[in-house]
Image (cartoon, rainbow, N blue to C red; front, side, top):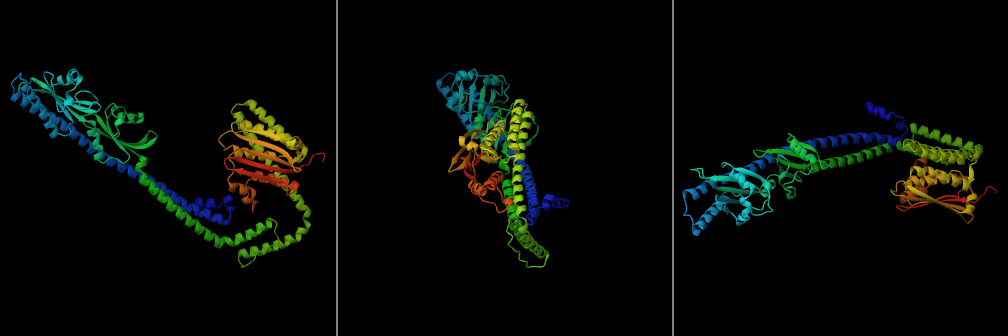
Length: 599
């Protein structure tokens, strides 16, 4: 409440119109609560969604880990079962040695055992048994290829050196003891010994496909627009929904560092320039981590919809609030606005009016006083012809004085910037150009100078601006010799050039061309200031050309001042013509009577 009281007692607020005061009070009363509501609700919904997602992802991760652990346990159970069955087959039911028929029978029985085990344990993709003589028995003929690589492989050496326990080998691609050399598999190896004597019988190799692990992610609650993958303790991806990431380190260094060094189970941070929710879960016995990632933008999609809905509702409420403020202003401010309009007409010179008084309230009293004042003013008009002429001369001098400080401010700003940059030589040149400019602008007190002096003055101005905007524009002059002797109110071309630089070329984005031409046409001086800048929209051009109903509605202060000055000097037949096309540029034509100093 104290803030509102302080707000409505500020000078700038007191100077506003009544209708605007009503709207400016209504606007924050509606907008601020809606903004706070939208912001707070967005934060609350986002935090709630993140917490709920973390819980859901953690639960899903637990199910995935349980399924993966069960799959790997099944592979170990398969190995144990095959150990027992192969012992029965080889030890308890010995075959006669030497005959090819017996060898074929043994090969068939062992491969049948392998195939049967894979039927019982479907998680096993392929299996092979290597006997003590190095002969390979595969569940698939592809498992038996490249036998020279099999017998010399480091993997079999590690299995052979074990005491019969299960050995897991990491995810890898290899061209032996697999059905596909391009497929990534995880392998379980086991040394099979005689359960009675401990004598080595052979080695067993069981493969499980990486795709079998990654298939679990789709089956158990995958995050929308998110991803799951498993990394080992070194940050290498061993299972993922994206095959191109397999057997490579995590691509994002920040994410890799978070995975390998952080003990946190969840975090909401930026990875690869995108806010992402990351949840980490440990896979027991293997030193793996199951990582689940979900972009925050996808998690908060519903929140954004709610925010948009709140904004939409807020805009509707704001519309009705402004509508109510308008209705209130009609009841309270309409009589005042009517009186104000009559006052504006008086200000514009129309004194043959009278405000109709329909009430005896405060507005009625004001209207009566206003009508009396108008009558008094009409009585005094016959005595102020001379004062009116002086007033016009004063307005002209005032317009002239308003242009000069504007240019001085911009130039001093350039000098300050150059001095900050240490460009002392450019400071000297700019200061010299400024002195030359004002020497010409003073013109020994004359209000009109030759066009030659005005052009020299404009060139001094452009030399200053070129130092500041060297990459914005270049300029050309093409003025006929007979034009240079003509007279012109000083500081007439310079505002047109300044307007072209600031509103046409500065915002173009590339080097532009400013061109000043002059010639005599039908006894009149025609000076054109053109640029190839951004141009103006038709609405802007119409606002410039159209005479404003009030000073508050005026557009293009500099151009209008130049036009008014020319018409004050020479009459309404002279002044400015403006043509512009968006994206092509603007052309301002200045018409003057041809007058020389001799004339």
